[in-house]
Image 1 (cartoon, rainbow, N blue to C red):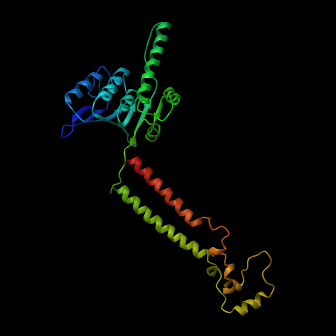
Image 2: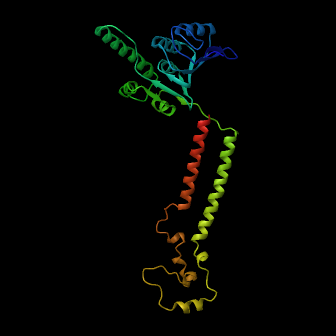
Image 3: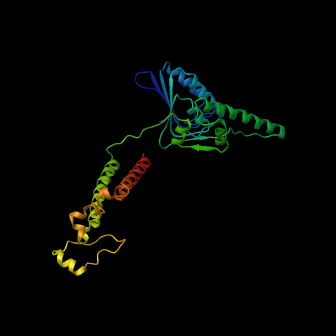
Length: 298
C-alpha cells in the first residue's frame, strides 16, 4: 500500500486521498507528494462531487503545500480534510482547505512561521528574513480564511512559539469544524465498564444502608424493657441545659417534633445529603476514568 494514494470510491462520484508522507517537489519515496503529481492525479479522476483528504504528514516545502491547498480550494467538489495523525507545517495548511475539517481524537496540528535556509552576506540574509515573513503571512491567510475564532495577534503568537494544537483546542479555535465521534461498542472494555458500574452501585447502596443503621438512635441504644426502672435510676434531675434530650422521653410520641432525623426539623433543607453527594462524586470519577482509558485504547 502506498502512503500517497488517490482513488475513486464505488459509484465514481467521490474520491479518497491519502497524504501520509512528505510534501516535496522532489519525489524520492512512494510516500512523497508534490503539487504537480497531486494536480495530475486529481485531473485523472474526472468529475467528482466529493473529495476526502486524509492527512498524516510532518509537512515539507512551502510552495508545494500552498499549491495543493489552492488546488483543493479551487476544485468544485466538496472537500473534507481529516487529520489522521499529524498535520504539521505545510500539511496543516492543506488541512485548512477542507470545508469540513475533522480531527481524530488522537491527532494534532502543528503551526509555525515559514522557515528557510540561506547563505551569503548580510544583505542577502536580511532579504531571506523578509521573504520568510511574507510567506508566513500567506500561511496565516490560509488559516484565517477558514474562519478562526482567535485574533490575528493570537495566531501570530502561536506561530512564533511553534504550537501544537490538540483536537479540542483546534475545534474551539476554528482550525477544525468537528472531532470524529467514537462510538461505543460491545468490546470487552465496554462490558468491563458496565460491570464495574454495577459493582460500584451495589457497593454504594450497601455503604448507604450501613450508614443509615449507624445513624439510627434506636440501633445504638435499645429501648429499656421497663421505662419506669430506667427513670428511677436516672433520677429527676432532667436534661442539663444546652444538651439534647437523650432520655427515654425521646421515644414518646409527644416529643416527635424533637426528633433530629425528621426533615421538618432540618435547619437547612437545601443541604445536600452527604451520602448522595459522595455517590455522585464516585460515579463522576469512575465515568471519567473509564472514558480516559477508552480514549487511550482507540
